[in-house]
Length: 294
Picture 1 (cartoon, rainbow, N blue to C red):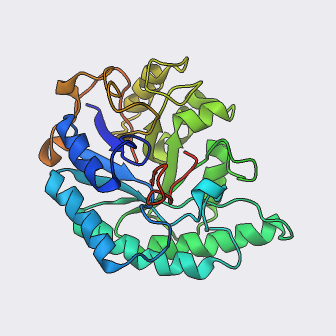
Picture 2 (cartoon, helix red, strand yellow):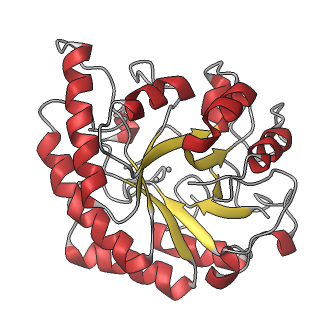
């Protein structure tokens, strides 16, 4: 059965950030995910409290959260491999962990970061191993590593690129691949082959159609077929709906009875047309800035 989670950083962007969990619940969903919701690594306690209360009051579960990733609107795509900004990321880890502990979130997306002028790629990659290890040690769940599209300086474009980094994380058991089928397809990756080869490494999945990054059925990707193939491998995690759409009609493709209900039901989720898989996070507003180009 597909377990859906709504990315409230790309969807419901006509609403204030704190109203989006309630909107997802009103649309019949029991789970949400977010990019990092603030423009700084360490927001004020009252801001974190308001965010957590909004999710609790909506009666939904937070299934995914990004680490602080810099200024997404300006083109930043993570701090994991960015020399000079490591302290920001390390300071962010306890905040992420506290939110995860309070809300039961167990999937945390660590965007790798762009290549930096004047810094050797090898130096960035070594730094990434250190920071990813710190992230994994500091959170109550799985650290996700995601290939993304639309960011020319971002070095992880395919599932193989991300898995190669994961393979170098000696002794780290709580790290996995975030397979966003949209990003992989747009980057030219062979999605069926990636599913076949890396199914055991996939810790979360997100979907959008292409071209356009819209809802399933608005483009040309065989999302249902890919999700069915992933399910057949035994994947039973969440599938993140991370696409762009006007709020009215954003989920017309997915029958209400198949959306998962509230938290208790979110673990039972429904099987359906753009199948299951699992976990990535701020919006077009200044308050939504920590996720991926995703």
